[in-house]
Length: 284
Image (cartoon, rainbow, N blue to C red; front, side):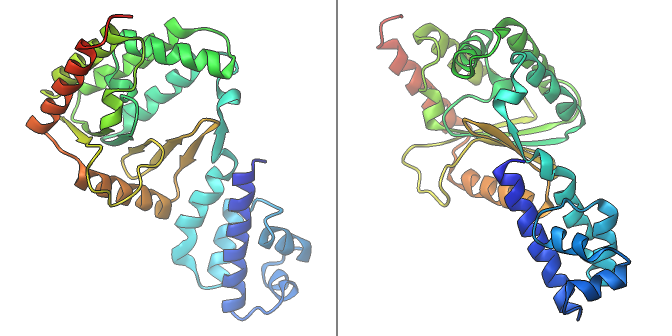
């Protein structure tokens, strides 16, 4: 079990322990008698040594008078073993499989909220830009090189920008306009692509300027899919968040970042400035 999953189980156990004590069960033995469980099971759950089942959560909350907490706690239980999905494990056969796994999530999502402080969001990437990104992924994680297939699968997601009634709220840090993947031609092509997609009716593209007053630290990139799932990327892993209270924190972070962002003409001006920057750099 990963450290993150273990810490989550321990926090869950502490929360359940407080429910037990608040309900007047002063010992695990007394609670075990009330639930017809073995005393050791109560102890293991409370100390984060055992993952409780969904039925265990329902029983615990009903007996302790905390029925309103059932949904929140079940969300923790369902994902505790997948909170951290190590990139090496996800990518061990290459990058295409992970890109394919994203498609069903996109298909069922109605409202996207995306934050990328330093890189253009994958669904807005050009073929050339995405190829350079996956080239780095292959080299960094030392995985089989299926970059061409991974790029194709990533670009497949772009049709959702044009179909259905999905809403895309995308925020990029200004640095994303300058992080150089592939040299001047690739970057100028990518920046032109951003200018083009800005005209899409269901896409809102915001840029957080480097000098904008910050209401929250930029942090890692994250993607919110409706109010059901948040994916947070780090160098070593992808954090999958589905607990309602944590989803609310990411939604709050997005709102604070959005307050610092500019839109419309101001975004075009920032993109044109970035294009001029790359115009001054000799082709590589």
